[in-house]
Length: 317
Image (cartoon, rainbow, N blue to C red; front, side, top):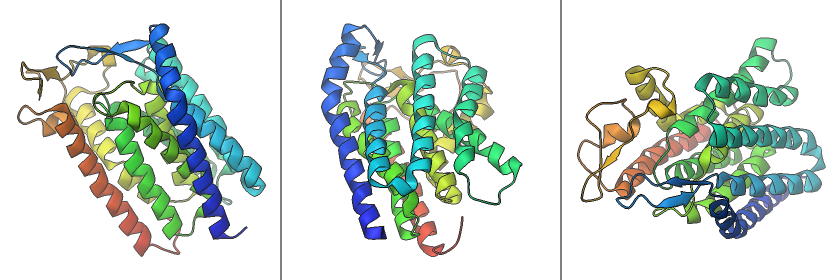
């Protein structure tokens, strides 16, 4: 199978992922609200209740498109199946976290376990330490995309930007073996953004945010684009460093959320941790403005990743 055929199949998988997620979301939102799986949108004056755990729709679209990819590209069956297993395990951990709120330690350990299957599809001639670091990377990346969250569309938009950059970088570097994975997640995220953008009708929940980072880590190691994955995750990495430096390892229930003033603008509370969002909020701003700025930062690093891929063509990074 040549590269053109593989790209067409990857694009087809992405389209399937988009359509499944897009058309399942209205029903899923209704069912979640009926089951009272909702959360308050605390960044609105009226504090409306919004359906939670909408990332199930992303997971569904991704899973079905990967299964189509396995059928159409049997030569990639092993790595696609392993990828599906890891993403499903990560999604299950996210569901559990959404329902009973795991501690940071529990989540890190469970995500490390979820990433273990990737060891079976690592490049040849790598050491055991390298193999053990792969599930560590999955756990860290998943947590990073879960941390920079809370505003309408912010996680989904950053995920789209990062995966678009990774997808284009892999095409530039002729690493077509991960194209089905990246297109499948990208299609699901684009569809989900229609419902998650401001004003959000649904939140992704941890089931949605964790699988974004896990997918990026999988592409990084299977596609051997670790440096590019690191670059596109820099907004999340910066956010994580700011939070850790200012507050250490804190549980979410101890966080003091960003506040909303009488004009409906976001303001930083007098005390609390630092973050990328709060670093931007030097003055009161509308939620959409903050999200667009964060997306802009993500786009800068996404373009940087593509440039690195262009100049590193033919090299394993």
